[in-house]
Length: 385
Image (tube, rainbow, N blue to C red; front, side):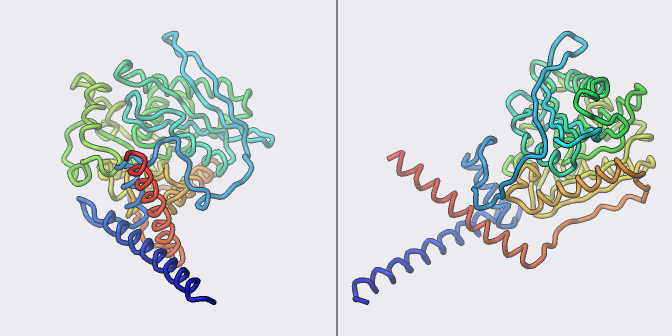
């Protein structure tokens, strides 16, 4: 081997090592946020969102995903509402013979136009359809500012009624119905369960709520103060904007159909799975709602995922904790479809510790994503010159 080749190899190795060091230093720097240190994987995703390096329609890098065939057929249609309008729904129907349990899914998005719809949350719904073997119906309820409260909740409840009335067309089992939602959609999911109880509507077997907003009132929650900047994917400004346009009248803030945490009666509601995130302004109110449900005799399973931010389930393809939360929801929903969920005193579970190999994998993937993001940033700067 000539000296020139040896020199080239050594230079190449030195460059690779330097790049690795730059990536590691950058990721570790991103891990130190305004409210404290976050895990490496959470840090790179927060950095990516903060720097607009990811979009709602962007797919994760192929090296972090697995391929497979779909177990369902998907169809989008428009269904009529009582006021003459039509709203979109997307039906994910298993390919195998039914009848199948029915999951009604309500997407997040701050109750506001431009913050979320059935397309932005399609990955979560696809995962639920694949994992549960249920018919999953994603509801495109109307949102503010054009449609303030109660349009979103009325649309969502009418979508439930439509699903029951038309269950035979998609091989659905009306004896096994669950409502699921994230963030604003978590609020709507539990409100729909309350509406079904109050209006003697369809029986709901369970509700699964991902980091739900549960009150529009000015309640002093520690998580609202610590994580309200917007760096953790939801800000105080967005929450105030949602309140301004979705509940424009102050009297609406105490309505149980906007603020279920303030409801006078939470009895006779379906068993609930409530999943919250450590770095989330909505964390404390979601957990407070779970505690209140339990006080009224409702079976509640509450899990806080440490080390992650609001909306982390949407990143389930690249976050083990997001995938774990989806798996918990799958197990819970399937259990509720097939047996009675027992009541136990409220007990908030904390999911924090990972297996050693899983933790090493997470950190390695964090550095890989960090390198990918640094590369994107570098290319963007070069293109701007």
